[in-house]
Image 1 (tube, one colour):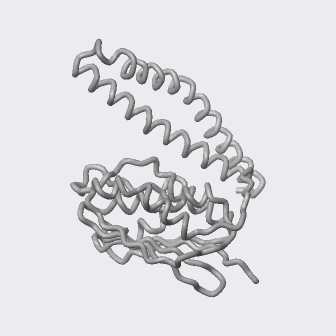
Image 2: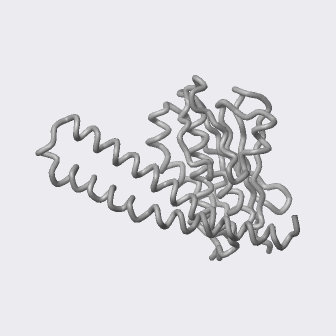
Length: 242
C-alpha cells in the first residue's frame, strides 16, 4: 500500500475514533448525571434493589468514561497533535506520589510494594503525561498479580538515561503476547481463564504509555520469561546533560 494512502487511512481512523468518542460523551453525561441525582437526592425514596441497580449503572458509566478518555487520548497521540510542555521535574517525587495514590488498591489485593529509587531524579518531562504512564504500569502490575503479590519499583542510570523498572510476580506474558501488548488493540484477553486477577481495562493503556515515552525520547519495554513467573516493565527518559 502506498505510504501516502496509509498515512491518510491512519488520519481517517484517528478522526473516526475522535468523533465517535465525542458523540458517545453526550448520552453518557445524561445517564451519569441522572444516576447521581437519584442516588444523592432521592436515595431515601428508593429500596435496596433499586439503589444496588443504580450503583451498577454508575460503575458502568465510570468504566465507559474511562474508555472514552483512552480512545480520545489514543486519537490525539496518533494524530501527532500532542504538544509536550517539558520542564525540569523530580521523577522520584512523582513516583512516590503515584505509589501513594495506588496504596488503597494494592491493599485490597494484599500486595506489598517495595520502592527502591534514588532520593531525587531531576530530568525534563511533562508531569501529567508521565504520571499517566506510571499509573498505567502500576495499575497493571496490581491487576495482573494475584492477591498477596510483591511489586518492586527501582531506578537506575544506564548510559545517558534514567531507567525505571516495575517488577511483579504475577501471571506474566508468553513470547507471543509480548509482541502484541504495546500495539493499539493489543489487549490480551484474560477473562474466563480462572485466574485470580482483574481482567477489566480498555486495552489502550500500554499503547498510550509507549507513545508518551517515545514523545519524551525514551523507550518502554517488558521482560517476562514464562507464564506465572511475573514480568518487569521498564521505561527510560534522557538524563539532563550538563
